Length: 175
Image (cartoon, rainbow, N blue to C red; front, side, top):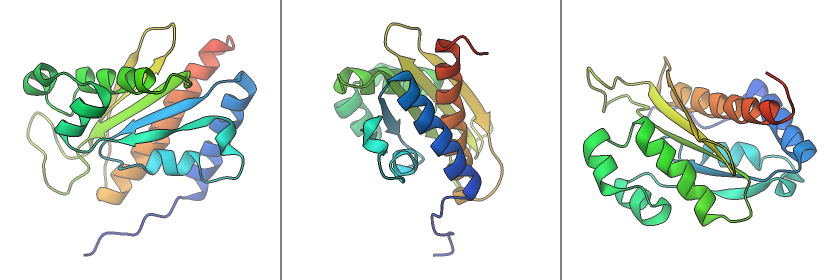
């Protein structure tokens, strides 16, 4: 195999530290629901000692069957919109919050990291995200990232951290 090994960049680790600190400051706990990133977001969140203060854990639901069985993603959603869609990541994030009663915020990721699997409507690099916050509307977001599989996955983890930071900032009256 010619894939690059997973190594968290300094920028990603710095952003993770900021998000963990923001979660700690807000007194909130996070849970992840990941597909194309295969647990890398949870891995980043638990990289540093003491992260158990704010990180509940994560669900890696790579297959549609796991998305349904573990997170409650509806079969109709997958059939109609596909695994890489706003509807699916919304149900993934909400399902993670439902499954983890002690978490306050969930972030989900599903995408096409490549090198294959893309189509005209859903190209390689397309990644959908959702953040679900107890008592608030779930938000979805999509990005198209460039690069090799490892690059897409790292960019997706970084972006997910950015989305969590945005949700936390909105709670504290920030932008």
